[in-house]
Image 1 (cartoon, helix red, strand yellow):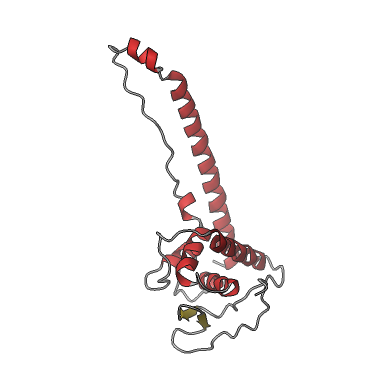
Image 2 (cartoon, one colour; image 1 turned 180 degrees about the vertical axis):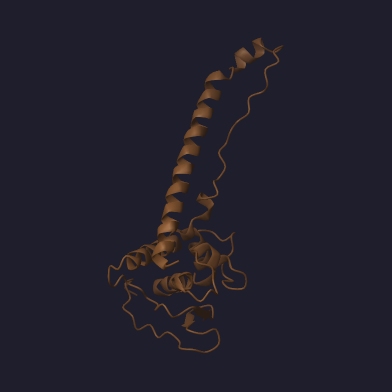
Length: 197
């Protein structure tokens, strides 16, 4: 399956999931409305104290699976652990590194963002309990939109890490991107920086 076909399939899945969430929310709203109309008030409840009606149950919608599996949120949580103190361009490079693995056809990594981020022994900075900081979410969403534009061949989209860079290490202040796990070329930041710093 090519990258374009994978993306098209992912888009179809997202649209289907979004429609399902909308239908679920609408259904819950209707149920809540029906319960609100048919549930007796406190005064009516006292009058019907001898009634055998079952008690009213409050329906609170739970977070849906799709809402909790937003790739941008997974990337933001990864950035929190891997590049929180780094410059915006280094944070973007971490996201590009994840996307490079998604696009890589070697079979070493899953072909979706969440699978890559949560793959055991890979991104130690990812933790599901990390907060989603707005500035890190903005970086993740920005890179994702650039990645999608790149997929439809819009030319230079502001990629800050070449496709062959699949690994990185850090020292707490900076991350260093390489083409191989041990050794290989180290990225020297030769591409234009679309973030201005």
